[in-house]
Length: 414
Image (cartoon, rainbow, N blue to C red; front, side, top):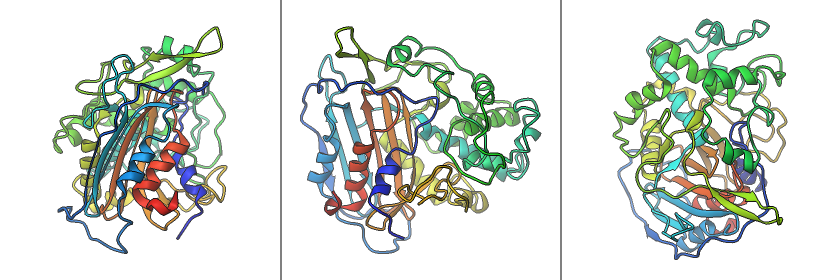
């Protein structure tokens, strides 16, 4: 089914969470100009996937590079990687460090934010495959003292597909102003604390499973479930179940380390000055928090490929990744990816682009870093991107729109 062009823009902004929301501030001066680096070639590779449907539009390196460089006043650096049988391309734009002017490293690490949710969902589904978690049972069975007694049974599956009805954190719960973000970026917020703050608010709807709305609280609870069932932190389970078996050596799931190991671009936020202008504050180092994984475009591409090929989940649990509930999306419109209906499954979202190409993936954002990974179901084209916004957490709708369109819809859709 072909969607309206505006659905692509809605896809770009569909991932804001209460914890990683930032407050927009006036645009700052563009970073030091650096020549963009790009590598481009077409040809087949051995993905082992079924190639179904028509070939995707040819990659246009000029259009791709223009997409990466289309927001010089709002980001300091961008990198993207496209892989698959229908072409390869790697590009960067901007600077990794505004002080030295160092170029963005194509193999640079970046913070994942809510892309961590896909890893958490995978671990929960693995536990389901091991008969250690029943997706149809209420989460209260596994975490009896976490949710208020007044809550109805919340099936585990609804945590993963955003139909749990759990409330979200608000700007009153955590700092969201630029000054507050800088001042409190090293604060630690345990999962139990985040959930306890969230459940003080009113639930968005009453019947679990009846509506879908994106949020973070369900995944805080899912991570706590992993920890209660396994006796290990969810970061440890992600490491032993996913990162080590797939040899994702450039991907980490830190619990307390505030640094980013290896090559990386710095993250910044524009902080207001007394004279009405702004200055960039370096927030690269920050408490990893609940979405604190770190990775590279190559590792995320490897993870996405393994996940879709069934290397991490047996068929029954694999199907959960693509099982979008047939329910309304709360507050949804005809212009969003689901046309008013749900568009998230367990840890993945689905969107059909203006040219009719359907992609699956996940986006994420934390202060100073925004990223995403998307692929066609048959893996014939895969995109992973990251950029460094200066306006706090959240997506830059126009930039994500340009990158996704350039990667999957072709130059005629710009």
